[in-house]
Length: 460
Image 1 (tube, rainbow, N blue to C red):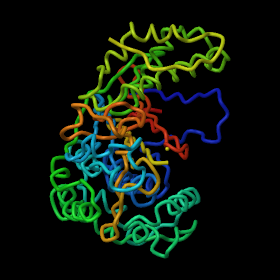
Image 2: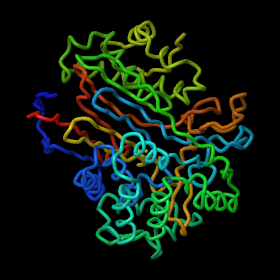
Image 3: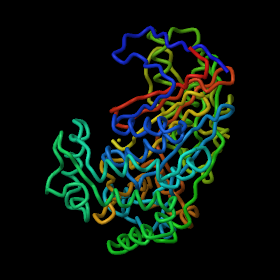
């Protein structure tokens, strides 16, 4: 299969596209090198993505960690596959737990949900990878054990995180062993994290959810009055999901379904289509006005309705129906900006990467998240593992029938219910003529925005 590549752009850029048979794009060069190393060993794009993701937990601890969640979109040469490896809240969480509070605490164990990243690495490697997890983990293990230089941006975020988290149990021993945040250019080592990554790789993730690490996580949680248990970890599962899509401007934009916020992109595109956006140049005043207003409408619906798909008030297809989108588009004032509320249908903390290999058979987009710098949930020194604080998105103090049972707890903070909302990120894949043409994603704090486009065998 061949396909001409056209990267013509009408915009000045300091980042010209780099073309090659293999590509890895992420925010940290050392992590990108980990992915390229897998490709040089004969691995494919999924192998590269998993190795890159594991390395990012070491070299960019301000945005993710072993205790993060993960999402992925994979192109296998014929179709796209969606992976949701986000974790649920502890089974013992209930509305009364946060009674009297207006929000879940930003810092500490009350914001910790089951981490899903490890299960995502394993699922991707087993279904699409060609190299063993022990090989994929090797660069990350080496960075953790031998050390890596702290880059300027990471150093800045590390200091900011240290100022807020230095008094949290286990934090300083993990991330500030010298009694301060590591300085830019210093070599930082985390041998405990190296040992944990090695154990995860050797047991194919079993140690994290059913074995030694699970026991340590649960014991540390209990010691500090947390609700996370070995049963919560053992009951975790990953989900292979069908993608949502919308045709637009000659292509098909593909997104992961809720609990992510990718649906907001599709809502906005549908609104723009109803507004006749094709009549306006993208950079014209009217084109920009419509795009901004459409996104504001989409985000209003996102924050009100998007949660765990099993517990949403309205199904995703209702938010994407032409009838509903037409009604939303009618709210846009062509002459001025407006403030919108949700309709009624019938911050630092994310890392992003994308990879592509020479065959064009595997392109992958993967997120690994903790929500905010240095995993404000919790961390402890003997494992080097930090846990996410995705539970922050629960709205505290509500009481509904949806509070019982195993539910992911990270709905938008102003949501009126305690239910299964999860992540807040976007992963986009654009398809044209049956080909996965491009992938794109954004770093939550604006630190990076990357895209990798596979070069088909025989292509130019």
